[in-house]
Amino acid sequence: MKLYSTKHQSPDVSLEEAVFRGLPPDNGLYMPESIPVLPASFFDGIDQLSLSEIALAVTNALLGDDIPADDLRRIVERAITFDAPVVPVEENTYVLELFHGPSMAFKDFGARFMASLMSYFLEKSSKEIHILVATSGDTGGAVAQGFHHTPGIRVTILYPSGKVSDIQEKQLTTLGGNVTALEVDGTFDDCQRLVKEAFLDADLRAKFNLASANSINISRLIPQSFYYFNAYARLKHLGKSLVFSVPSGNFGNLSAGVIAYRMGLPVRKFIAATNANHVVPTFLSTGTFEPKPSVETLSNAMDVGNPSNFPRLLLLGGGEWETVRDLVSGVWYSDAETQAAIREVFESTGYLMCPHTAIAWKGLRDTVAKMNEDVTGVFLSTAHYAKFLPTMEATLGQSVPVPERLAELLDKPKVATPMSTRFADFKAYLLG
Image (cartoon, rainbow, N blue to C red; front, side, top):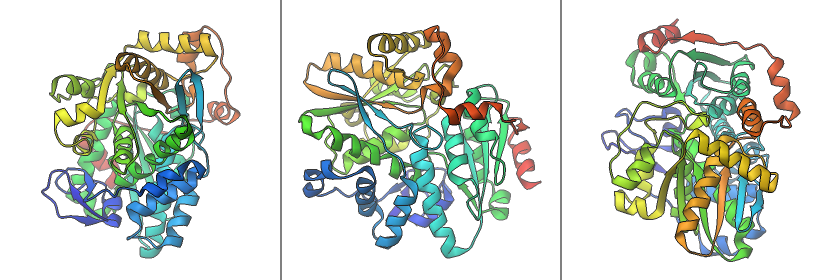
């Protein structure tokens, strides 16, 4: 696998270099030179495969020339130790539950695969790396869990003060060891900017082997494609076209879905469902991409005003507004509409959805209603509802069950270092 920069101002690199570098020197994003199409035989028998078997087949198609078969199997088996069940909610409507991993968020797929892949490369090179990651909510917890106690890896997580839920904050500030949390006095966009500047800083690159665990890292996108294939496998017997509604912030999740589509997965349409941070739905409507400062909402993991993966989504969708628009529809909803969706589904079905999941459900319902086609709708549940307790209880007017492993976190002391939004302060902290 050779990877190029979306800005085309940096040399092509190997998979290993792309994984550890994170960002190309020209501040673009790494993309594979080609994306293989899986054979018809794979799709003919996909409904007989488990999630881990699907993951291995997809990974082998993408990375098989870079990593021996036995090593690749170990990488996948170490990372994918939990399921992504497809659960019926309403007629022709299913939820793809992605919160059954250690941190109870979809980011576990990317973080654990990335940790497994990095460990493989590090065992061969015996070098050490320093991972920098910005989080708007769930990435931090997944990365903290995925890389905790991993030999040769130090992790620094930046998160916006007061803009993640209590449980999300505890997930990334209570592990200790090789994981450090920085509480940034700003927004997620500020955190993301600090990380990007660090990767381009000559002094920091000279002192550290820096790597990123955000969705800007190509190794995060690859495993996120697995569960789209898995959803198709579980629903293939219905014989209908699939529509996926994806709650979107930095747009890595949706980009991974389009990678699956490019590999041959039969998909009728994707829906980019967002909150008030709707720069991509606006682009899909108007053809103009205009980043803006992020707005704080109840669906905090999607509070992203300048989505890093937009260049990837554009390229994967054909490179032009018209081609992307044909494949992806964009919708966005207010906090009030999000809460109304949570109540509506709970009162009619008993199913509990986190705010991000609720936006995906509403986007699916509204979009399919306009399509006038007989399709199977799948909305992605990206996090367990209990990670957003205050919002859930205020919305429903009652308490909701909390899994024991999340409840235990609330009693643990938070350990985080305050940080300004000035890059000079962040750089001084890292060098100190």
